Length: 581
View 1 (cartoon, rainbow, N blue to C red):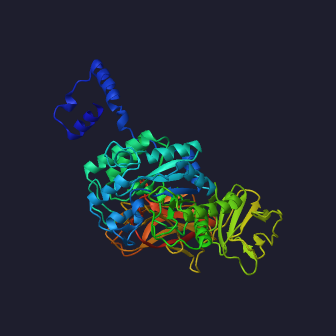
View 2 (cartoon, rainbow, N blue to C red):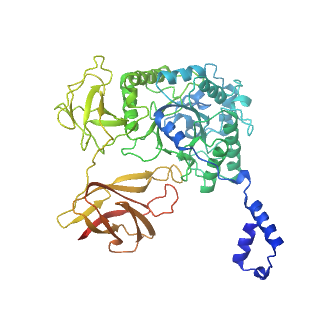
View 3 (cartoon, helix red, strand yellow):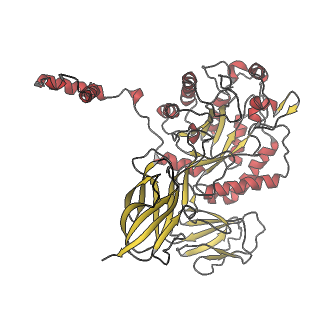
């Protein structure tokens, strides 16, 4: 009723303002407006994971991914031919298998050697802190007892058991957080298989997905995360999927591949590790071998030590940049885990038994770059991963301002300390171990001064995109949508306190943007137009002397979460105008 009155008023319906508001009419309108304004429970905006859930999710760092389904039977082979043009779980598309022929695989899918308790035990041995399994991949075959289609493991296969439920229960027995992968596209439903997997979704397909999501979020216990994948949904469809999950399970973390900025964490590209730190929850998905996620029978599984070290190093890189690393295994069609893959996981687990405190529950490295390797930090302890030991034996910590109390090698049974040379240099003798990890205890709140840009001889501080820390949105409209810059950040040295004018030079284009420039505790609005030929002036700001002041440029508020900057900046300049009185 209240909404109707608001609409009518703005349409200027004749006679609206001639209504006489007697006391009884007013009371009735008030009561009606209160009742009418209360949205139905199903229309309320569902909650998202709270800060504690996000912190706990970020602290896990290492988890298991499982790609398992009808494709596991084929192992990358169709009619005697090995297919390598795409991942083996997508062999239906790669080999152009007709849908009826592929669907008949369900009649022989009988993974009698699938042992969910043993899989969870393997994850524990590997030091993994969560497990995610494919509930349905692009082929549309569900590993759970969905009522939306008979094309599932319970109704269409001789196995007759709900694989997702069995693993969920095994995880619950060992208190292992559990999640599911869900493909937004579905070749059995009618999507056309293609290499891009960038299919738009019909309304009927959207409703089918929503119905399956309701089953997964109400019948399989608490879900740590739902790993959406592929497709090209509209903004409203992405929101519909996310809200469906959050209505049933507000604390379930949704992957960014639900698209359109509706996820709770960003998902990197397949086997991609960013070379920068992200300021949000994120995850890096990887497989034992980068050429496939599903089982490939003819994969060359050699040099176990090198493969184990490869993934230890990737885990270190991801943890040092603030993310979680989810590593995939692809069981055979009979449900058994490939021994080589199990051995890789156990090898990582042995490394983590010695060095796990440097991985779990840590924050990303406070240094922009380290010539010897990587770092993480937890409380008053800094962990240094020495991938490239300096020939001098001197491990330098650039900009580190805390007093070092002691330094030691993790796993050193002798417990001996390493010599400290000067304020921020540690001595390390040549080590025989793979990536030695140094634990550095320090005093006080962590303080690291980043390399800062100073003014030139003309008094102008010039900040370029190349010198900026760039923050990306990796999960836009779809997998083919390239990452977009959503924030740029610089460290600035103010050697001369006073008033500075802010100028922006940018690439031309057809746009008009409002940007927020944050510096010195103030936010300055900048109007930027693509057809401007000279620098855009954002205004002036008074700045105090500082050896390390942070300046950021973001889309002008209010802005949609993870909105792109929308303009390519060449230079942001701070031009000195006058000294402070």
